[in-house]
Length: 120
Image (tube, rainbow, N blue to C red; front, side):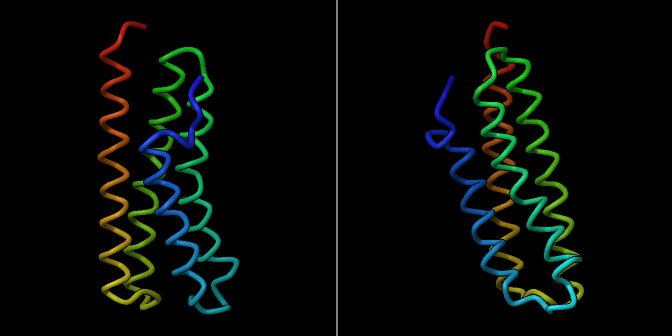
């Protein structure tokens, strides 16, 4: 088992989650139970799934959890677009957060490929 805090993919996902939480503080109060909650939940799912997968003994289980984290990045990417189009995000925040999502997706894809290329 690996300490999830030592994983690059977890670190990047955690940074993204903190950034999303900080940025969404400025969303309208009417969105507390709407987009604010939804994007925070989707974003926090990414490091949670990475952490959960890091404690699995079977490589395929680890891959499955990383794939769940990767799925959540797609959800966050869409929700960021929706937040931008609803004018809850400035273009600079949108660009910064989407860039972080892309970076998380890339490190997840690398981690998945490495696990798939090792003996199960």
